[in-house]
Image (tube, rainbow, N blue to C red):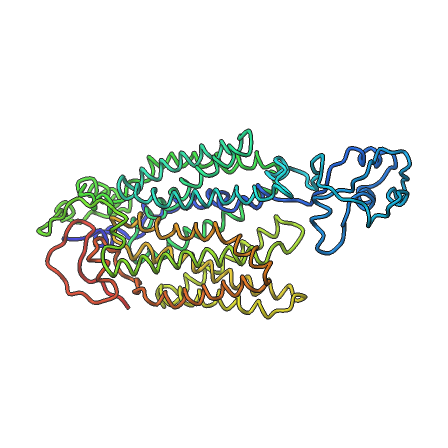
Length: 554
């Protein structure tokens, strides 16, 4: 009796049905990109200085230009490493006194400029930007700058918490139900963030959005990889994640067109409601249905796939059912990820790979920092660097496999970090070039580990395992800013050394995983155990998608 992969070989592994579903689901990462990295524009911190009503009146009376006003009244302007002074401090001067001249008002005071007392800003700040951001509206600068970090950390904390629960929902109640439910909550929480009356509510809605938005992405990813045949799985996996890079480019353009953060947040949140229409467009995964012993529904979906692809269904399709090796309806459990030594090894290695990939990816971006004055173009250009990663994967993954490219990409990212230590500071262009090579390596790491994670775990815990393992990615996102900025204070090269060690270790640990190129998705724990070693065919097949034979590694 045939399995799902056997049926797909006959009715089409990537026919019209799969193409339609893939194009529909590829809109998901495009729409979710602003949630992960929209903070670049939503929380942009422009140059700023203390607001002072007396200075504004004096400037108007004297006819100063903005440059004159800053030069005469702002401390530390233009001095190297003195950004804190001109952004957060002001002279303790009564600017309303009539003795102040228009040419150099501070020169007429008894104390010269260097001896004047400085105090924190008393009347807020003036921001040098045409629109608005969360920072400018809530004054999240100077002593309150940590609140902007908390806002983004809240999102990553939500990702982490959601990873522990959403995967269980997808495996227990279905990929489709999980997708629709999390899409609805993601859209609603995004709109609520846009209209939040104060900072506290904004952080709360952001936390909720983080808890569910990853479920939308992961459910869509799992659905498309379970609908296609094994020979197309790697292609849709890569292209699904390339769509995220497309979303980053779109985000830069939308942010440029909408410079006000509330309208921008609303513009990137409303399209998520359209995913609710997928109730009528995307069916449930037949693999999941069979893992729950809902064979009749699974057969109907396979017949629908055959019809949409213009192929006749196999004659023995309706015979697909539980055979002698009758199994109970499988319910996912966190313990299943560590039930056997082999699954325990897979899970621990995958967790470390997710963690190291996240730290290296975000760490390189934070360490390089902004390289120009136009943050829209900077963001757009840095996003383009990720496209060659997808091309490299498409060219090599079928020829070489998954494991060796994953190991090499870790080593390339690690080497880039270590090389940057020895590049002189005045050769900024070379630092950026090497960092871009490292970012390509980390992009390949993230895309490849996602694919390998899907291919190593059995169906009934696939979503749960993906969410639990990838939760380490979110943990890395929470701590990476602290790793970068705190270690730089000790020694500027220290974060790069740490990133290099993480990458080298990850490259070595990758080799403990079996190759999954051309291997059917494991349906049971036994299938997962047999990956990487030749197994003799067995006579009995458990249910539609379960095949306990011919699992070969290379």
